[in-house]
Image 1 (cartoon, helix red, strand yellow):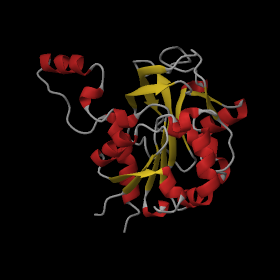
Image 2: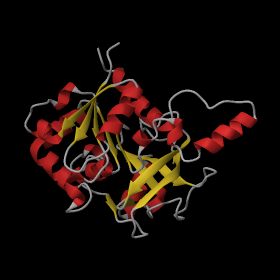
Image 3: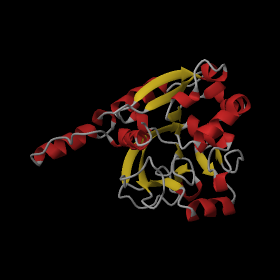
Length: 274
């Protein structure tokens, strides 16, 4: 079987491209880092790929707001191609700064097939500080999100200063009604964070950590799945190892939860490869 091809955006201020490329390869894909200018100049064709990834970092220094310049540059130069990519049933993932870019382009939330209108925002954390931590997350089993299939809960790292998900009340209600809220911040036992800090690290409305479009094929989240590509990435891995050892067990094999999110996308994309 041919491998799913993943385009990982690279460019000014983006700093998670190598990790994302590596994690997608662990997930079974053929991943390639592509500079944003190569897409704009048509040196690389977006439609040679099955999955497009907007990665984390600080694109253009976030000078006009997180993800704003990246969104404007892509929308102005290859906006039609991005829309066709979505219409063709390809997959798009936005991680942290990439999530911010997706909402600024209007590719999320994609209500009623509209992938151009901005209706949600990711704004400054309530704490006023940049947060570098790990969080507990709950996945919505009712969501159409391709990326979170078969996942109930997981831990992932965050590192952002503008991660508060915000929208007008009717927009939040529509996201919840449509089951487009795919991931929420949670307590250690999996119960909702209910806005409590630091479990909800940024003050996101309704504890929203990640949303998808109505098809489940466009997904954005503030936590970093690519940064949990090995069990030893987790800050409590030594404690978990010793606890299992005392029970006569060993660390579980298989892909870490972060890579499983990417693997779900790869498997979905492979269904369309002839």
